[in-house]
Image (cartoon, rainbow, N blue to C red; front, side):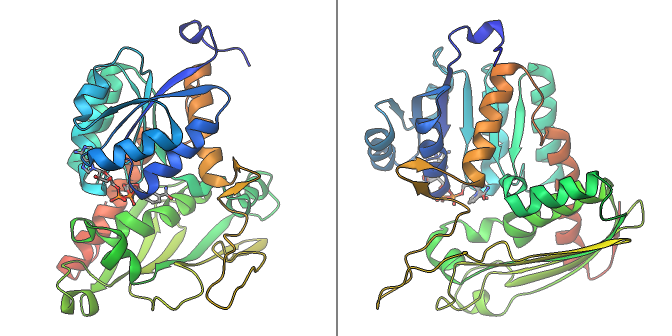
Amino acid sequence: MAVTKAYADGMLRYGVIGVGTHGESHLQCVAAAANARLAAVADLSAERAAVMSEKYGPCQVFVDYRELLAQDDVDAVSIVLPDHLHRQVCEDAFAAGKHVLVEKPLATTVADAEAIVAAQRAAGKTLMVNWSNRWMHSFAQTKAALDAGELGNPLYCYARLNNTLFVPTKMLAWAANTRLPFWLICHRYDIARWYFRSEAKRVNAVCRSVKLKSMGIDTPDFYQATVEFANGCVGNFESCWIMPESMPALVDSKFELVCSDGYVNIDAALPDFVIATHAKQLNRGTLQGDVMGEPVGFVNQAIKHFINCVLLGQEPLITGHDGLMITRALAAMVESAEKGEPVNL
Ligand SMILES: NC(=O)c1ccc[n+]([C@@H]2O[C@H](COP(=O)([O-])OP(=O)(O)OC[C@H]3O[C@@H](n4cnc5c(N)ncnc54)[C@H](O)[C@@H]3O)[C@@H](O)[C@H]2O)c1
């Protein structure tokens, strides 16, 4: 691998901002990467940051992310903060000359997404939005089959991505600050747009607030959205996060793609093996986790892709432009559901 001169020793010096549930996945992958070194972590919770530094470091620990960004020995950062908090930290990271891997969604408003892309262009640094599901073998192989012309032209998709009630009530302290199009639908919208090679033209969505509202959490229980793309493709997307906690898995997922000469059916969340005790199932499937201590799966591959792109000076598979176009469609879903009428883009 011929790295750019800036990284003559072939190592990317890495910081992670936000080391909550998913921030730990980033730490695990960076710590295991042969061509990256974890230099620093930052989190508002000093205790959590210290625990993560001890587990995946040693590395510097900050409560104020701006202090991390001021470090000369940090080349790139993962920003793994709540959905609605990405803009300011991305802008500050680019102003400090860092490359950025920002978690999905890029932002929760079009104005925020535009500001992040403008900051990246002004800085000339790498920006990747981590729609890591593209690295699931099922979605990646479908893309390869489409690109090879084996399925004909894509016509429409049905995509469902659900969570159990555990997620908005116990896992996320900030569920009321996001909406399902940004938290879940965005994963499948990214896949559909990648397959369709087109942008949303007309978005018609509905949502309802019953269960979470009754629990004092101000965000809808479910969204259903129909998106017409400029080239005629149609995507149907639905997500809820009120499935019973007794479901076999936290995630329920289904993706169907109908093409002029083919059909694809993906149950992405189903593990392909079972390890059961009397108390619970222990298997995490082959999509993520670790094998013999080494991180494996789509999250690891996505983060490796970002590290390699920065070192090689290459554009990542998912750019700021992708993030902005996807944010436009997601924001239109929220707007359409609020207004009760379709939104034209
Ligand atoms: N790609 C994926 O598959 C995937 C999976 C899960 C989450 N995510 C995304 O990752 C992001 C984080 O989600 P999560 O589940 O880890 O959330 P989380 O609540 O578990 O973690 C967020 C962390 O950010 C910290 N934080 C908040 N404000 C901060 C600030 N100003 N400075 C420093 N630290 C701050 C919190 O203390 C917390 O530790 C979200 O955007 C989410 O959508 C992506």
